[in-house]
Structures are given as structure tokens and as C-alpha cells.
Image (tube, rainbow, N blue to C red; front, side, top):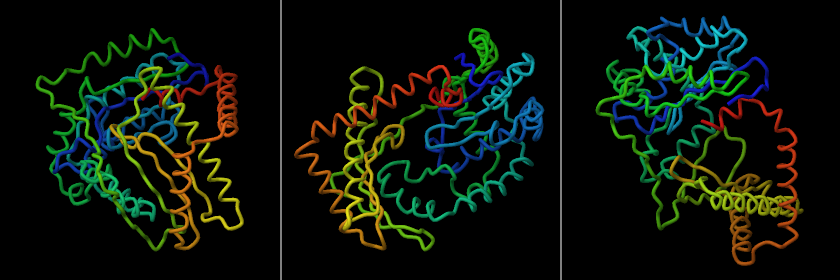
Length: 364
């Protein structure tokens, strides 16, 4: 997509439809490990030469060169100048190197084990530790419960190279890769460039099936109480899971729009309650959206003083029940619509100044 904000820049993405959810039992953490290895040698760039080349374009690791691994996908990100056609084209070749030509050298693998372990240690915050207590309940009965992207450090520290190569060969393949480019360039030229470059990837003759995994529902209400000495606050949350919201038709859009108005109105009510002198919570909110690829979720959350959870939980459920029984007033709906229209009109006024980065991420 052509977009000249900012000028002389392009925002590139290699989106691989494979994340930690596809790991075999002996590969826990290797989707993320493989993402790291993209910067440690490919057929065209030995060692850290990819980073060195990209830095010659004025790019910095982090702001302009980055990647992330999730449950369902792995995404590589580049921000590159477009005023030198030869270097611009070479930047696309880097995406191809990542998609199809990582070398996965044993010495580089061994060096990266310590980097991953240090990353795991640095993430051991109170928030992360509490999430790890909650995930087995939130994802109960699902493969997601034991496929956190950071993985199993025992496996990360000891896996054989062929185990990593197996993940790369199984899942980094043409039918699971997408290339996205948004920026100050001629779109037809870039499309031809992508077609010519990535047409060199050879499809797997007997590809593994890329399954979508679900988070099953359950009749009973599951409860988890999680704590950590370093957390500075107490929350109580009610999560309701449902099949993923789709956005393919006008009716889908209408449903999502109605849901956003619902959330806005309920959030206004919860905000008003939090302002009362004897409010049962410090603050509260409702949110709704994609939980994982196949599942959406709505959540009611309140932050409380000390451990005064019961009044907050009761207030949340009471307000949700009041809406269920009696709905909202026309005044509340008009206010929510007006707020939404103001936001839409502001986006419309700024439509010619939209930055390329969020557009690229929307395509991902």
C-alpha cells in the first residue's frame, strides 16, 4: 500500500502463520528461539551481518528492526528508507532470508541459549508470575495452557539443533508466510519485487496440517486466586469466553460496533460508581475482544483497596445484571454514539496523515 507518511520510508512485515501453539512437546520455546536466530546467520548473511547491513541504512535495532513471537504467529518488522532503490530492494531480500534461509548454526544456537534465559529472567515480574498462575485456568482444556511463547527453559538450554530445524522446516513455508509493505513507494513495483523474490520459496511436498486450536467452554465457573508479594494492587476479574468475533460482513461489523457502544456505556456507569463517596472499587472497566485466534472474551475488572474483593465483585455483577434486565437509557446511547462519531470524524479528517506503521500492523 502506498502511503507517504512519513516520506522516504517503508514499513515492512514478514508475518509467519506459526507461533508457540504449533510447537511439539520437545520444542517448547523454540518458536521464540527461532525468531532470535533470524538475526544470527542466514545463507546470505553470516553471524550478525544482517543487523550490520540494516544499520548501514540508518536503522536501529528495536525501533526499526524487531520481531515478536505469539501463540499463533511470528512477525518480523523493518523500517527502511526508500530513496535508494538498490538498498530498498535489498531490504526485501532480508525478509526472504528470514523466511527461507536461516542457517541455524550450532555455535550461534549455543550462544543464544543464554540470551533467551536472560530474557526469561528479566520478564519474571509480578505481572508475569501472576499471569502464569492464571493461564492454566483461563486456557483450561486447551493447548494454549502449556504453550507460552517464552517456553520451557530446560528445553531451551538443552535441545538438539535438529529439533529447531524441524520447526523451521515444518512451518516457515510459502503458504504460511505473508509479506506486507506500506510506505512511500510505487505499489505495483513493490508487488512485482515481492512476487519475484518470494516466488523462489519451494512449497513443502507433504506439509504438516496447520491446525487452529480452540479454548473450550465449560458449564461450571472456574476460579483462580493468584498472588505475588511484589504486586502493588488487588484486582478482581470476571472473564466470559466465546467463539472468536469475525469481521467479514456488514452484519459482523454491525455486531462489533454494537459491542463497542455497549462497552462504552457500561464503562461510563462503572466510572460514575467509582466516583461515589462509598465506592466499592477504586476503578472498574469492561472490555471485549480477541482472546486468542479462535476465541474472544469479555471481562469485567475492578481494582480494590487492600483485599476488599467481595463488595467490588458484587457491584460488578450487579451492574452487569442490571444492564441484562433493563438495558440502557436512550440518553446513555446517544452519548455513546456522539463520542464514537467524534472519534470517527477525527480519523476522517486525519485520513491523509495516517502513519504507515499502524497500517502495516493492521494488515498483519
